[in-house]
Length: 130
Image (cartoon, rainbow, N blue to C red; front, side, top):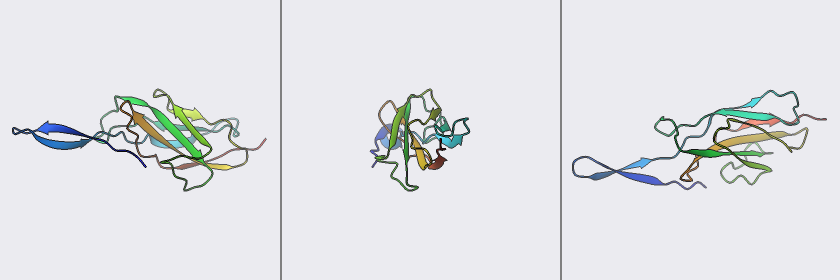
């Protein structure tokens, strides 16, 4: 399960407090990328944004999770592939997957405060055979 944190921002003349959620959104447009060697397939995505649509300025990185079931739990990601990716990367070549199988992958973004986005929509990726 995800841990969510809220930030309280003073508003108005009387200093009332308004709750603002500061979590990043998932990376967008997750897709498989054609590669010459289908045994090591690649994923690509677009940079995430804050929930209000503003650019995510404190992006710390991504978590890529792939499993063998179409409905695996991307929140806990106890599946075969779980890697952290640097914030400047928007793609990843998946190595060490078993050939001839279909994997289901999702990506999450996380900010410097440790907030993780929900998982992106899951995409399927097939690993070729030798």
